[in-house]
Amino acid sequence: MTTLTGKICMLCDKDFALCKCYAAGEKKTRDAAAAARRGDPSTSKEAAASLEVAPIEQKILEALKKHGPMTTTEITEKSGIAFKTVTPRLRPMERQGLVRPTGESRFHGERRSMVWAAL
Image 1 (cartoon, rainbow, N blue to C red):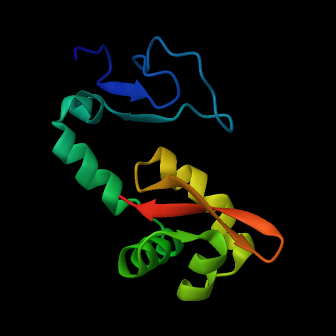
Image 2: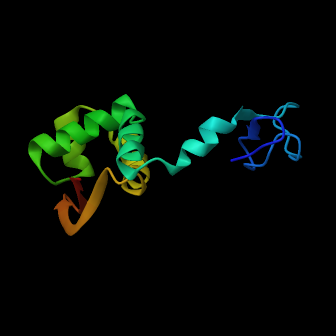
Image 3: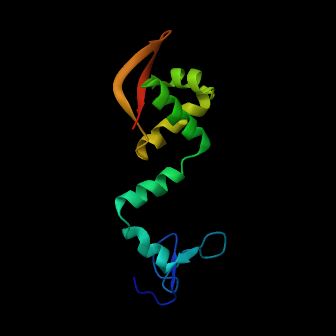
């Protein structure tokens, strides 16, 4: 990637000199070399993504890997993480390719819960 300034805007991916984005009064930039690295092989991207897993998400993954597919309630019981903490993290983790719904559901009392599995 050839740039005028050697800096790329983090918001619009344009050269710093051509960018019109402002965040907190300052342009947010990164090196053009970092932008060029987007072409890395998928294994590099997967390795980078695995490093960005939050500690709570890591505990959820460990519980799913150790105990197999579970509902949110079961994940809470096995991991020791609060239900209100586990629930909002599962869909983002699915988008990251860390977990997936199995298509199965189980009842906990009167409540039906989706079963999740680690990938």
